[in-house]
Image 1 (cartoon, rainbow, N blue to C red):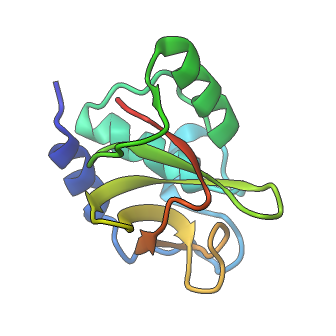
Image 2 (cartoon, one colour):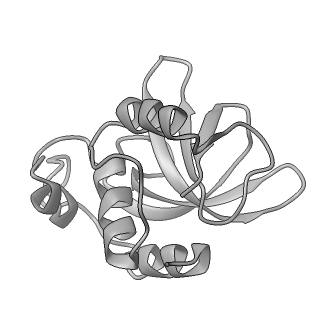
Length: 143
C-alpha cells in the first residue's frame, strides 16, 4: 500500500510541468485519463495516484464526482488535513479545483496542484506548489 509521502513524491516529479501549447489544456495527464483538452487539475491528481499506487474512490476528471464518491466511501474529511489528502477547493465563482496536501502549518496548507498559476488558481496551465488557507477548502479525500 502506498504512503502519503510516496503520493506527494510522485507528484513532485512533475513540478514545473506545463500544458503545451499554452492555454490549450493539452497535457500528458489528459491524454492518460482520456480527457485531453479539458481542465486538468483532477486528471493530474488521478495520474499521480495511479503512479504512486494510491487508491482513490473513483477514476474521474471531475472534482465534484471524486468528492461525492469519497463521501459514499467514507473517505471524506473536513478538518485536520494531512499530507497526501486530496483537497477540493471551491472558489467564489463556484468553480472547483483540487490539489494534494504536501504539508500542514498553523494556518496554511502547502499543496501541489496541476493547472494552476499565480493569478489563475484553477486554470493556469502549470504544476506548482501553492500555499493555501482553508477558506476555500470544501474538504478532502483521504486515500
